[in-house]
Image 1 (spheres, rainbow, N blue to C red):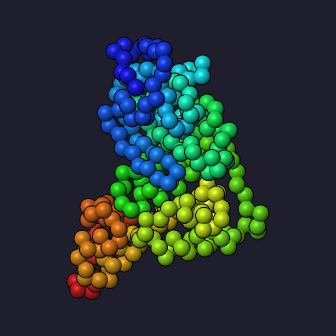
Image 2 (image 1 turned 30 degrees about the vertical axis):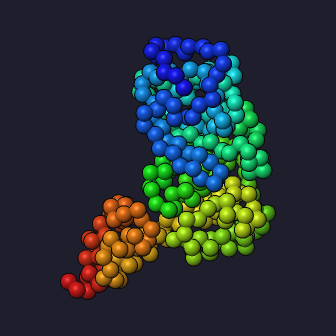
Image 3 (image 1 turned 90 degrees about the vertical axis):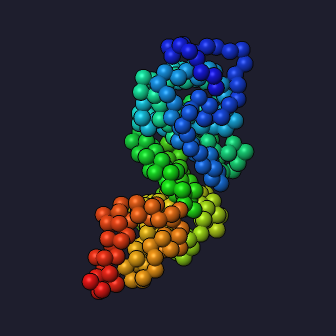
Length: 291
């Protein structure tokens, strides 16, 4: 991606370049999960990206700011809250608005045809989606993308599945009486037992004999939260019990629960309880008994 000096003009080139989605972005973070590369990227105000292509199809969501995207003979106004698709190899150009562009970019592996089958009609054409059911997932994906623990990939992947399902306007319904089917209960039990492990949505889906997107949607529909969120709640609950009922150092508990460091654990503890781990220990369990 080249950067043009004139923010109001995109220079045409004879042949488009195949480039990474981070070109032109001085500030980005990517995670590579089983089926996706997910990127949080910021483009400075006025940056103009020459005509180019990518080696994977794209579903992008604008978090803040905006792009004006020229693609397939169309001009897309990609403002905050808007999602759009860029098919594999489709030439396009972008100009960031005066506030820049903060984008979450999802790039499925185009070689995995079986996995992408439910999303083929969406990813194979240009779409502009202004749907809160789609855009609502982007901040959650960003939070998990920056979590940096061994549940990050699972959390990101499960949220991406929900975003894809919403964007593809696919509805999955269970034909049973409305109770969770047996295979879904088995998945939940496995996550409950193995929350310390670096779980993969694709492995869980394969063990249940269902598509990962169907698993992600069904889990959220029946249990009210994503698989990643469920696993993260189990992690914090275990850690808080250890804080309250043991004399183990908080740093040791944080590592035992799988947090990247004590600071990460402290942030999550404060988010769930309003207290730091040390404050929580003083107010509960052994800390209160010793007071």
